[in-house]
Length: 335
Image 1 (tube, rainbow, N blue to C red):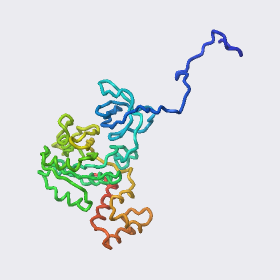
Image 2: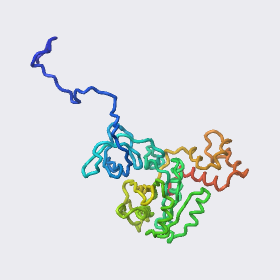
Image 3: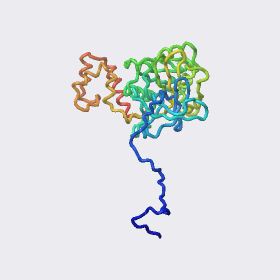
Image 4: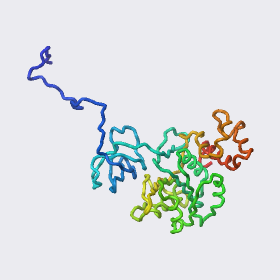
């Protein structure tokens, strides 16, 4: 082995290049001042499809975003090849601050929350009145998630030709939730017009378990070239098949509105939601909590809401609805 002394300027000294190159490290990041604004339409296996101006662009998340997620509904800044041509790829370099975030966990024991949709202002909860049977616990959980995210809930009941809507609507009447009832799985123009009127000018996320007609309704709302594949309910299990595998934002024709079709869910975990935030969706009851003990669950002997309602400040049915929604976090959807 050859050893060198103090003088290492001989011609035969070899310097091994660094694998990372000789460029000095820096914490400065490019400003990307030339980035264009985009709207995330869908995310599939790391590929982000964005609407940039009038073009659909495929992009990847830039390295500088780190662990920050990019989800459907995000407003982003995009650089790179923005032509939208086949086999081109751009980069998402910034995600704008979100106005709202709809989250869920796999179940109530799962500490890892998943962002479903960003920047929506309305949550359409789609459920069938029959085939498959309605699951009120799942509806309750979606309502809690909507109230927590600051979204206006909209209840859409399908297949009313198979079962009456009255009993289920009576359950949610004290909440004042807007609703629309459709008579057939293949929606007629009158039904579609009623739904479209409630969606105009808004960004609405559609949720519901498989087989309720959610994607069928979305297809009736958007142009034919935007329609998605649908499935049928299993005659043995009474459950639908997952045909929608990723969330997708679709523009409503003739309005500034968007609908976001999400995959069918079998559960809607609420592990991430603090029950104390649900009360904000009940402005007639919230002042009555001033006399509640600290960390009150609003369903215990010392809760001040009982006296508040007894004094006539709010309807008893409203307090019952609040407690039913709070209790749903402790129960499974099938209970």
